Length: 405
Image (cartoon, rainbow, N blue to C red; front, side):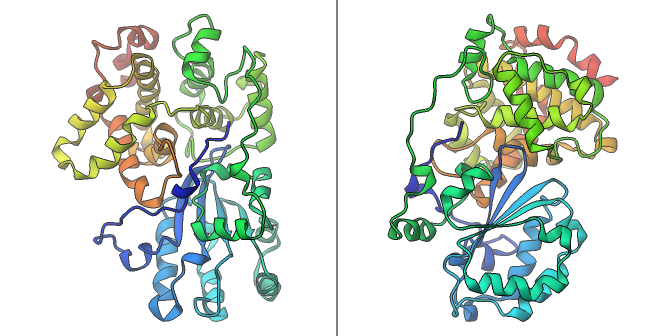
């Protein structure tokens, strides 16, 4: 299920802290991280229409800021979306700069880039690409896809999470074309066995009052047994077609055998996908504004504030959240081997636990979300209360004993 977004909020950039190391560049909103696509890959957006005139922007700083942003995500699979609309002679970087930029993006940036989508390409883009072909490896060239209209993005990724500038939307409307995310076709009624894209309450009612959704119990159980010591767990994607097939099995109520699949990254992606496709985030829409205010809370008081936010959740959400956080805490306990510290896990799971009711998540809004998720994972035992979760304690068994192993 694709989340619906209010068009007037898409492209809105929240105020940026002037202490940001790249404030001079970041304030323009040229680069945004838009959460994950359907298959657990980070969506990073570069919007040409946000480039100011060249004399007002240090392009060297722009390159450094792009690398600064990518450095936070290049260890996991990611997708780059480039909106070409709005590039003019007044704000266009030089060919020399483009050549330097490509040469500076070494293997660590290219290795986990799964796709590069160029939206609204012009002849200029195609000419530049041909000029650069001698410098570009065949493998990297296969990752490029031209997208002429926004509606085409539906075929490739979860465009509902994209941070799309208002100028791009207006250009589409002026062309007389309807943006893909304005389509309001009614969704088909879910199957009784549906697991993805339906509410926690629906799943509970259709699964004999199962407190924890079957997708979560099965993926977590398998990963606890087979994946805790896997380096980069949750940072890698899996074959898109295989993920679709597993989702279909779940939605049809058919058994899924992860042992037979034999790839721990598949249940890891399925778990993230399940959370991301909930109609309302696991931690509910209501907490989003409270999470955004976390930066204004003194560091010494943030764990207490997180505890208050978690305790305010509806009981069912609380129980499911505690089940998930307990597992993620276990993953973090093996971070020396799996390299997934609470901070790294937060970068992966933050946007899958909290998102706004309307609009996409901007790069600025990601910071408090990631801090919140990191605190929940690192201070799991403190931010969850035993009184409110006797049922989940029974489901989890002796949690502390398990963590000590």
